[in-house]
Image (tube, rainbow, N blue to C red; front, side):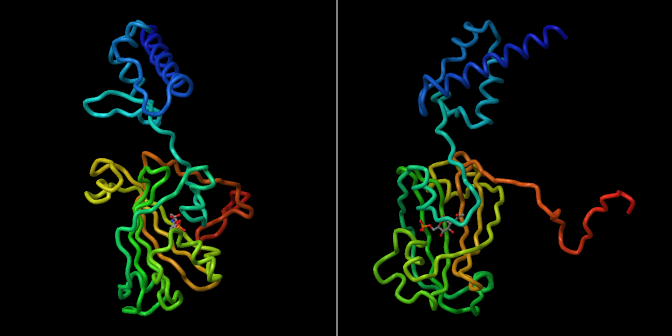
Length: 255
Ligand code: 16G
């Protein structure tokens, strides 16, 4: 029992030492001290050092690069669920947004896109396939569809560097919408574009955005989950939110 507690304490010491090191002397991309150096410094086994490193890898503070070693991971970007554009979000963080257009054109709306955009199946929709960068690092692969009839000449000058800025000049910037977020795995193409391994976790985000009562965009994107932390402000609902068709809980507990 006592030795178990001692091992746990040592593990915490190594973990906290590495965490502090990553947050002070070292910067993103720097190697952490070797397992051997840490074993000697703290008088612990390799297993204890590995456990401490594992915990920090899971927390996104360190990253293991196969065949090269363990390094300080780049800080994650907080992804707040709100109706902002990629360009706005990166600018807010002091980062430079850029984009590589992988495809752009007018296509006929498939049934799911038509439904999301409230247009008829086969109507013209603008399709954009874009790789989004923050400070030259690939962060997300996005597909967006917009109703072409509401956006005449949208692609005439090439793909706008910010879709929402273009929508703003037309008085059509979305004012409300809904996002859904799922955990997923990068497929082969996404992994290559995002420079992560195939099958690595991504956040799959779909967005339906509206201007007034009309849908203006449907988008589906894969965000690198090693570079994003989902940040969701929460507050106590008042009155309590209950799923539709259910009665609110009985405050007396008598039901
Ligand atoms: C964000 C939106 C995306 C929109 C894009 C416009 C999410 C999950 N997605 O990436 O739907 O098309 O911003 O950005 O937030 P832009 O104005 O920089 O082109």
